[in-house]
Image (cartoon, rainbow, N blue to C red; front, side, top):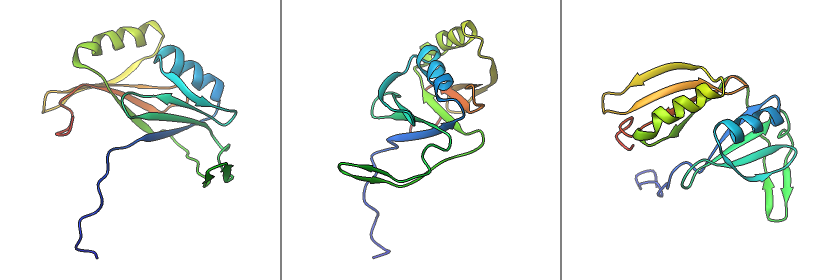
Length: 142
């Protein structure tokens, strides 16, 4: 059995961040980044993060109990500390994103030009999570 190749993965569908103030985080992700809400309740917001990708933003500590849904259960989860998420952006949009961040008082903390030709800028959300906008060329797969 161990010699068989694993079944295929199609990518990362969801990425989760945990925040101290869900309303504050929602304002940032909706107003500054312009993300569209897919689902929400008192515990979380789910955002369209591009083709086939969802960003989940949870109120820290609100997911420590099993959630029972009509179709099954979701086990408990939570997270602490500053996490990292990179958003894929077109190369010709990076300058517009820099301007939008500046207009909203969001400081760019770092910049990187990657050997394959991509560029990244780094900034923080209100909970201190490190966010990145990355252009094609960062990875062999992007």
